[in-house]
Image 1: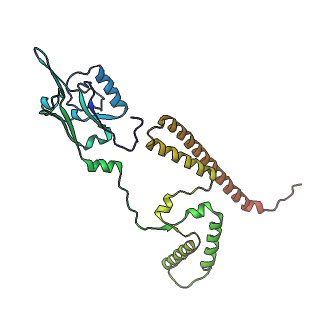
Image 2 (image 1 turned 90 degrees about the vertical axis):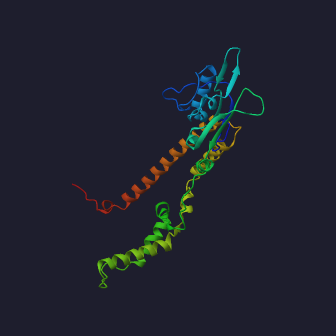
Image 3 (image 1 turned 180 degrees about the horizontal axis):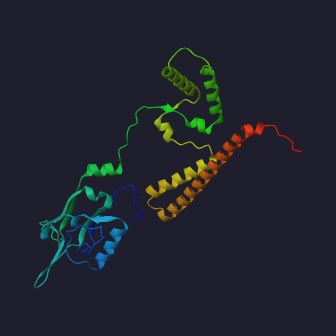
Length: 282
């Protein structure tokens, strides 16, 4: 099971030669309509289902006894009926199962019955490929430019000084009109200097730090291998990816601290207290 792609929906069917028996408190891998008493193989199958989050679909629906049993054997004095064949599905697909049971009357002679399970496939497709909201063609000002780039901040400040009228200018307009004019001019200055960004561009993260970009690419490649490479050791890959994610978090904290130190230095350099004359004390 560890070798299967994580994004695929894996179902297991067949003769497990195991009786899961009646459901006990806290068990989620079988329904309330199982048959028989759990045997040794049943305990092994129960542990397997619990480990990999599987569910026995043909124990979830109320059926007649002949539609629950999957194997029978005639003895001299009696017949033995057991439920040892199952259709196992992921727990996430349990709600999509519409019906499951065993069927008799097969043409080929066998002591096993056919077991079927019905699923609503369109809902399973939604589980694998969730729909995304279409954001349309909405664009917004690229305000991140003002946060990360000094040149953008300087250009925006110069454009604002050039476009806005002097503070003492009075053209007789109302406060609301002045505010609307000021907002329109600020928007014009921003559009001329920092530009716009679409939703797709905002989702594409750009890194100003080369080390952070390299670490991000490494963890992305490992994530793809974890989901798609069935022959890889997923436990080792997850361990390597977790170490890289820890390095990314540490690097982000370091970059944030460096940015804060730079801003504090600017504030201290431009503080009025720095420009006060120093007086000598006798």
